[in-house]
Length: 92
Image 1 (cartoon, rainbow, N blue to C red):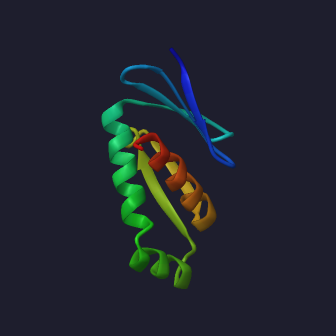
Image 2 (image 1 turned 45 degrees about the vertical axis):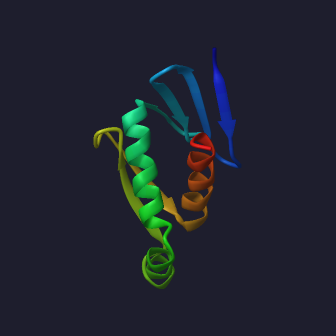
């Protein structure tokens, strides 16, 4: 059974019990459930009120290492918030 969730820019596809694909438009990242949890933790950290305020007053972007540091994501604030909505919808 294959399930997918979409946001404005991104898509997550779950084809197996422990296999997820994060489609960013320009590349697809294979994630296990544990890696997805780690990504969610990083996204929650960077989208807290204090960190968002620091990002807005600073560089306006964040670098995330994903999937056991095999992928580097460069996200600006709207992309980060869109990815947050998508990842949170997986765990609801």
